[in-house]
Amino acid sequence: MKVGIIGAGNIGSALARRLTTIGHEVSIANSRGPETLQDLVAETGAHAVLATEAARDADIVVVTIPSKNIPDLPAGLLDGAAAGAAFVDTGNYYPRQRDGRIDALEKGTPETQWVQEQLGRPMVKAFNSIVAPHLQDLGKPAGTPGRIALPVAGDDPAAKAKVSALIEQLGFDVVDAGGLDESWRQQPGSPVYLADLGPEGVRKALAVASKARPEEFRATASSPGTYAEPA
Image 1 (cartoon, rainbow, N blue to C red):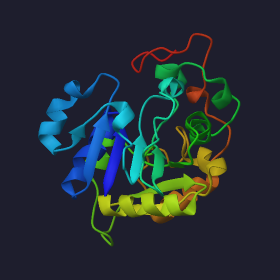
Image 2 (tube, rainbow, N blue to C red):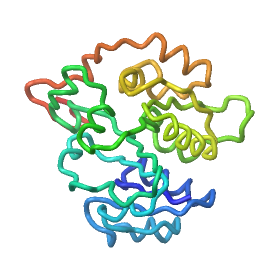
Image 3 (cartoon, one colour):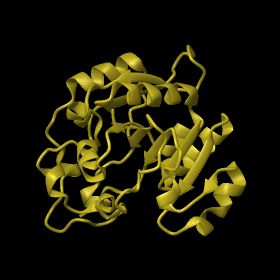
Image 4 (cartoon, helix red, strand yellow):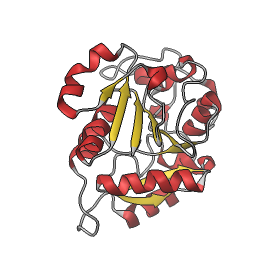
């Protein structure tokens, strides 16, 4: 399968490493240009491309960039993907550390629903609730005790199925987390976020989540700061 990755930060790079290991063809792009990705290319065999080329003929396109940069992506960025392609948003809104205030998110719009509105494609929310080293290193064969489960939310059943199958290949169980209107249940600060739970634990965590955004994940008048000194 062809997978395009837009964003070569922690999650994007971890996905490139794992996906190439299990035989998928990966194209990856960042904001600084393909020449800055040569170490990752040498390590993984992924193809470094311009951001406008990452979706070309891809069966799955993963958008994994800071929330603040989503509105600045070029129009038509996801054009050229294969027919029936699934589009994934891995993003998390960190207003105090990185993104500053995004009004729609502060008012309660689920993060990936907002991304979908910006990009004009049906998005699937996945890979946002696990840290990159665990995504890269903790996948296990199906049926292994202690296998981590990842929640997947979206409104297109076919796209969710395609993304879920990929997650299973990466070594994780999948829990259907509903539509994008319910995807706030896996946002930062929710019980499932970074918890590395099994399937039943994920289901319980999603069920008890509160729609109110935790204070530490809301913007302040001085946001953003840094990860070391949130504002």
